[in-house]
Each structure stands twice: as structure tokens, then as C-alpha cells.
Amino acid sequence: MSSLRRVPLFVALALVLIATGVFASMAKSTNQSQLPGGLALTSTAESTALYCTGLTSAKDGASGHVTFVNTTQSAHLVIINAVSDAGARYSRQALLGAHQSISIDPSARLQGNSFGVGALISGGGVVGIEVTKNDTGEAPCISTGVANWYGSGFNTTVGSSAELSVYNPTATPAVFNVVAYSAAGLATPAKFQGLSLGAHGQVELNLGTQIVNTTNVGVHVHVLRGSLVIVGVQQSGSTVSLNSGSSSPTTSAVFPQVTTEQGATAQIRFSNPGPRPAQVTLGVKLTTFHIANQSVTVPAYGTELTTITPNPAIPAAGYATVQLRSSEPVVASLATGSGSDIALSAPELPESEYLVGDFTGLGFDAAALTNTSSRSITVSFVTFGVSATKGARGSASVTYGAARLSGNSTSELRTDFPGLPSFRHAFFVVSASRPTLLVTLTSPTRPAGTTLLAVLDGR
View 1 (cartoon, rainbow, N blue to C red):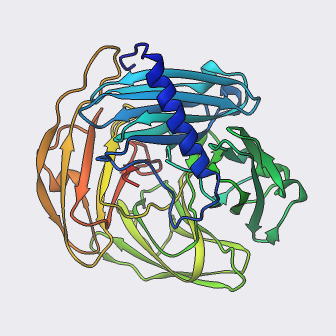
View 2: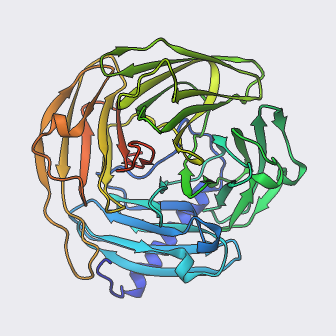
């Protein structure tokens, strides 16, 4: 845990005043083009905020912890507030030193079934992530709520459950509607319309109560008043995944590190929230093999999927990069696993800076760098140790040289930086010369690549 101590009352009061201003500014609904997945790592802001939701009690299957990491050389005061769906609340404050971390397990502190966690921070450069106890689900904490949230690929069949964890980080009530898409078309359940969530409240919606025994369910949450933090919680067999979703449909996306291993399952699952059918083409790059494009039509207000593996047209040959192009905006998710155990992950959007951290302690099976543009970029990284011990300081940062990454290419981090230490317990910041970089991590699993891990970006 981080170094903790009591801080002067006037400092805490000042931070509360800052928080009031932050909350007031969030009351207005916004529709951003991408989810705000954290803070600029080099931010000089006077104060920042992070919000997380998706974790549950142990009996509800998605228990875990939220970790906040200070990526800077300066200490930051952090005030953590947690709330449950039962209305229980918990608060603490900590002085988070250079390269230190602090973790909280809300299920150990609060009565309830599901939880939201917020952190108010003096200054910038602190990022947050939530990790399930079984290490199969990770989701970044985000810096503000959104007015629209989309997810796809949910499964409510027997043996699975799909829920939306919804947290209101603002000081005003929020009102929202939930609509769903499936092979049967558009569904607008009456119980999911005109929902109200109080200030700083949290709730979890069970999709299976209204969309019964259905595979590949797409969801659109439209916030009519206020802004919300939302994470999709998918439980399939023994696997729990946290789907961060998207704030808008898209006509293009890249999925690096899609497994094609023998015994694995990998699908791109689509939902179409629009009134016209979407013609979707998937380009698959896999080592030296030439793979024909995969095509699918996603009906208006419906869902569809494309199987990458097992697929007789795609050899079992490690990791593939899948490029999505669509005639109409769609919502896509990557579903990976084996047997009945399936995990969902949303596509990332390119950025120029990421924090990569081994938050499970298991290391990574793969860490890939993808340049989404046609022009080459320069990539470098700084590695440092993170201390979770009270009173201890993380190790000093070490800067590694730059490497060139060609346009529209994917490479392994180990290949570009052969002197990189072990990925086990590693923490490093990856930086690119332009905001066209994706960093993709997979957990060491068998078959390989069935669990994708979260990276923390600079948005």
C-alpha cells in the first residue's frame, strides 16, 4: 500500500472545493468521440479525477480491486470515495508518493452487490485501473462520464450473465435509457426506459431480465440528463470480463493480437444501432499467410459476428491483426476464450502515450505495438518500479532508446526493445511521436491470447 498520513484540514477542504467545481462541470451531458480513459501522464493540471465501476461482491462473481498509480516524481494527495448499489459509502485520503500505488477492494469495505469508486487528485499524472480477483477482467478508470455508451457481444444464455454497471460521478441526478439489439432486432424494454440514478449513486442492470437467453446482445445507453460511467460485466463459465465499451459507433477499427491458436475461440461481434444494413469487411494479417477478407452484413438494429478462429480459411498460427471497415457505423467487440468461457473487450483508439502495468502479477504473454497510420512513427519507453508498500518509494525511471515502427504494422515490444527486462511486475510508459499508436497486451493463458489486458492511455 502507499504511504499514508493525515493531511492538514485546509488542504482537504481545498480539494473538496475543487471537487465541487469538477462535479458541477460534469452535470452537462456531453457526447465525446471516445471514452476518456484516464489522464495525460504529464499533466500539469491543478486537480484531476478518476472514476471506476464494474466490480461486485464475491457472490456476484466480479469482485476485485481498484489500483491508483502515481506515474510522476512528485507526491499527490488522493481522496478516494466508494459507493455501493445499497447506498453504503466509504472514504479515505492518502498521500501518494512518487511511483507509488494504492489499492482498494470495495467489497471489503461496503455492504452491497456492486460498486463505484472515485478519486480526486491534487495534480495530474495519476492513473487508475480495476482488476477482477480471477485476473480475467481489467478496465481503466476514466476521467469523466459520457452521454452515450455502446457495447456489443453480450451473452445472457444459461450459464452466462451480462450486466451494466452504472456509476453517476456528478452531484446531480442522471436520467438514462437503455436499448438493446439482437438477431431479433431492436428492443426497448419498458423497465430500462427513464431510469434515474441519484448523485454519486451506483446501480447494476441485469440485461438477462429483459433480454432473455440471447447470444450476441448489443447495447446503447443514452444519458438524457447528466453523465455516467459505465462498464459491461460479462460472466461466461468461469471467466469474468469487463467491457469498457465505446462512446460512439465506428466505421473502422483495429484489433491487434487476435488469437488463432488451436483450441481457442476468437470472434468479432457486431451490433448495428442504425437504420441501414452495414456491410463489414475484415482484413486479417497473419505472419506470412495471405488471408482472404472476411465479410458480413449486419442488419439494421441487429447483430452479427465473424469467427476468426476456429476458421478453416485462417490457419492456427499465433496472433493476427484484424482491420475492420464498415459501410455504416457499427459497434464491435472482440470475444475470446475457449469452450464456454468467453471474455469481451472493446477496441482501443490510438493515442501517443500509454502506461503499461502488470497489475495481475502474472506478466504478459504478448505486448504488441501497432501503428494505425500509413506513416512510420518513433516509439520509446520509460520503465520504473511501482511500490505498493507503506512508506516505500518506487524505483527510479530508466529511459530506453527509440525504435521506428513502420506504417500499418504491428510488432512485439520485446523485438523492438530486446534489452527490456522481464514483463513480470513491469511498469513502463510507452510514447509515440504521433497519436497513432495502439498497445495490446495478453495474459499468459493456454490457449494463448484468450485474455486481453487493459492499458492506460493519456486521454
